[in-house]
Amino acid sequence: MSQVPPSDAVPHDATPAADPVAADAPADPSAPSLPADPSAPSLPAGPSALDALAGAPTDVAADELAFDVDELPGGALAALEAVLMVADEPIPAVRLASVLALPTARVEELLDELAAEYRGDHGGRPRGFELRLAGAGWRIYSASPYADVVGRFVLEGQTARLTQAALETLAVIAYRQPVTRGQVSGVRGVNVDGVVRTLTARGLVTEAGTEPTTGAVLYETTGYFLERMGLASLDELPPLAPYLPDIDTLEGVDRANGEAR
Picture (tube, rainbow, N blue to C red):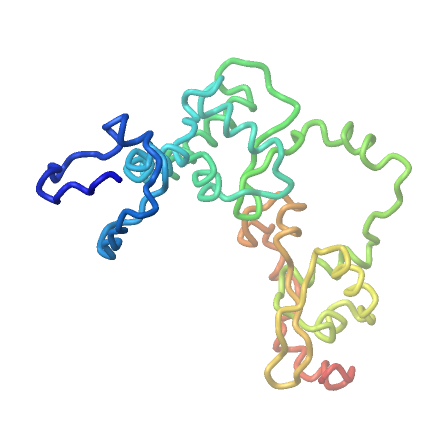
């Protein structure tokens, strides 16, 4: 029976597996078992245990830096262009910067550069599309000079356009928002309940709380409205509001129309 050597016979930093004879010898069931040290760290089995423990933080960092947009074909401009091509809504510059792992200021410069390139400002031909800031975000649109051609393709066989009544109602809401249905009816002189429901279903207007005194539902335009109009904010609306009656003159119309909840 093999004997367990005294503790001072093995150097403190020696590795038992380094001895091929001791590594290959079968365990002696009669040998006394030594209690495990509870203060010793728990490591995964295998020769690469220490390497795995030391390399874990490095692997995470490497994964976060798996690519550099400047090293892709076409560089950061092409990477930004690729993201914009699949966007189905305007994307803020801050979000684009996060996706590309670039400073927001640089992404804004790249956006301006792309927009100028599409317009042909650098000597190239003007493109049939353009990059615009609309609804607090950036998106690629067909260029304005080709609106008639694109309209024939998109609207061919379709009749789902807004009626004149819907356009007038939308204009009142846009210029006087937030506004109630009763106040819109007071401006237009007709009931607008059905038209407002249509505009809401189209995603052009949405509920914006209630009027404090009457409890009537207030309506305002949406980000989709800005996008469809090609506007970055409501401040870019043409100055037509002075031609609409002041909302204060329509006080009481909600009670008269029974809109209060």
